[in-house]
Image (cartoon, rainbow, N blue to C red; front, side, top):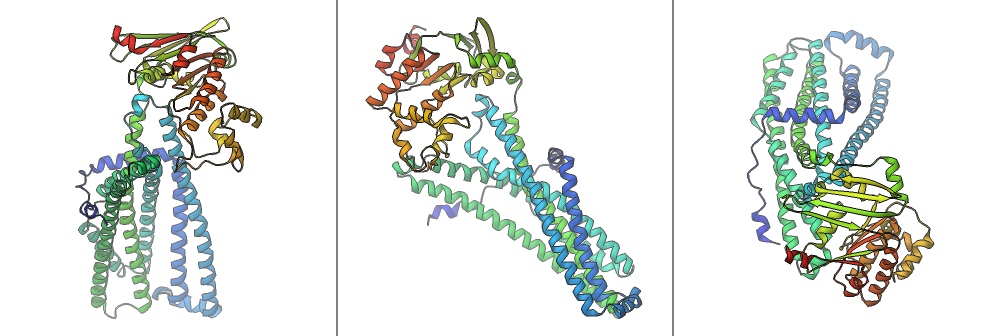
Length: 577
């Protein structure tokens, strides 16, 4: 056990509670985002659930208890319908009610999961289309927390808001039922409702503050788990398991504290409610004496209890809604960070016919220019066919940054591209133009990323090529042994242990780019991590492709630099400037 994990069990003080007006604004925005169609269906299901619950209780009271006002009618009913038949009817109707409620629950869950899926897809779309500057503001843990936890809490918050209205409707119906039984009998119900309200006031939940803590905790947990699994081999190599486990224990201890605090406050509220309701109802019984018939008394007490439970449901649903609403607040904050700014909508883009032409034909020239953020200097580069252009220089001089700028992956709002193809010239610029450029270029970063999918999916990313073509490329790059695994190209990749060497991962990243067959190849350190034979194989492919398309690469490899037609030494450029 780690002693210091216990000392950090209680989180720091919760942030100041937002004004109720702000909470209502968030709830209104959430309702608008869910859509009135979604809300109406959810409200309809809630109404059906309430009617079934109330009808079942009313049937039980009618068949088994009755009341003073309709005792004769009940007796007449019992003459024609014996008690055993009444009980059988009651059981059958309760069974039917249970089946219908099951369908209602399934439909409610389908609505909720559909809403969460829609929110997740929208967030992922924003992440994928965000600029590099926006992504620099976000952490992996924050995004994972949103996708895996906070969006679920958002949908639950909306669901609890509707449940609160459902409980209010049930409470009104129970109140009306007691008034029908007798005005005098309404007093215990009114007192019970008052007692429940007093209990809610005496035991403040702090739901919003706890919800804010939950959002921060979700991000911390996802950050810790993501770091551990993303770099599991590095964690083991550094003997950092205990450090990561301690970090995880500290976060989970905060989660246990949060859960205990919520249970404690909920139990405290229930204790106050039950104590006050029973005490006031008992006092009412003592004062009433024998003034009411047993039927009226029993019916009133049952309805009073159900009304009190309904008000309790209102209070609990409200607290759960407020506790989950910070998840939507966190989602709104991240969306605001990812929201396209004016600079992202600016830029020159191409129409459909132009994109088709550029996708299917060889380019005869690509010109790129960029004005740096400070505006102090302009960078430019020209790529021509049958030329291998290489960028070199000492580590840290900016080779990767330059390639990312040319590819529209970094500082894209300051870049412009002029493409010459089939005797015509087209221009792209800004973030909007960079998004189109990504589909026209094949980029292989220095550190390739594999996905936990099949080898086929990792290489083709949803596209289709004959197995023979893929196998031929794997043989050419010395990766034919990957086909010997069970299921070959369709074998899933379990990546927790990093089962591939650095050279294998690097060549798979290059092959992924080459199989896209784009007019331009941009390769960052293509021979890094490779042995002599693999490096020779990669150089041969690069030299061959440079005669068929535009190729730009960065490298420290002397052999590859000797093959290049144009060499740009950033170290020399920096010293001259």
